[in-house]
Image (cartoon, rainbow over the protein chains, first blue to last red):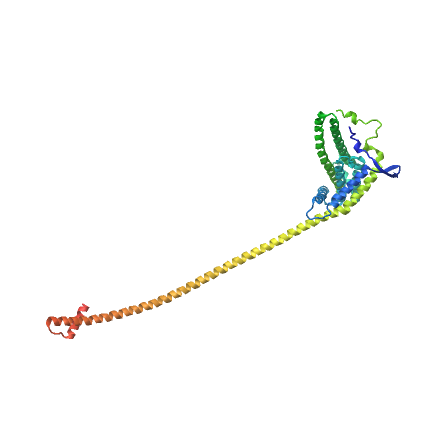
Length: 249
Length: 176
């Protein structure tokens, strides 16, 4: 049976050089990041290039994603949140398209690597910190001091708030990483049951119907998860950015 | 399940791929390149283009709605004007009709009065003629009666009575 972990391996395609003792190579991960970016550009820019008054299929998809993300930001972070529309739109599309491309057999899932999801989460975390302090100055610390709390339990509350704030990038990145990883391992394990049972002759062929139908159902589920995780990533980004814009609870 | 033996990782195998630190630098470099490229594409090209399409559509719809409202107001106005013209015409027609009716009535009345007067005059003339004729006839009757009386008397007594006596007698009888 195939190794379910093998699909996550980083394979060097071209070694380019070294920076500070680290080898820099063009890998399968880099290739699929490039495919993701090109795919998004083709969908959003190419799909809407006709600028039709009545949109075609691709333009409809481009417009739907634009409006979906715009509405998500406005409902969670308000009108001011639209400053971050390019960032949230980029994050959402990157995660969504990387997840969906990863569902195609023999491809590589960029978002199944913790280093990528952590980079995305830290990008959001850094944006929240920098914008929060730039806009509110020290008033940004009000985020950790909820109003209407008795003074004697305030230190405890501030500690908890601070801890939850600092753990955000961890939960933000691990959620996406773990979902993608677990989903792909499950798919691979059930798929290898099919070939395993197929090796046992006619009875095995009939027995393989069960894991096959499970793989079909799981693929549908993973498609939902791919979209859902992109949405969750985007909406959490909006909620965190809302804290930077309006730090008072 | 028989999968345990297959998924087991032998000791010599490299660690779990997502935790292989030597791949991090390459991934980070390409992630930064890819994400910066994506951000530029989205911020510079995708958002202005799609936003422009949506804004153009919204303004087109708004313009079309305004145009439709304008046309509706216009048609409402035309309808109102038409109704007003219709009411005016109806009123004028009614006035004209009543005026005509009155005029005709007056005319008819006049004609009737004239005719009545004429008829009355004719009637009076006829009555006068009748009266004259009657008088004449009565005079004639008297003459005939006198002559007849004289003739009768002459036959009876053989001599003609005096004309004056016969006339007086006849006058007495007629009066009686």
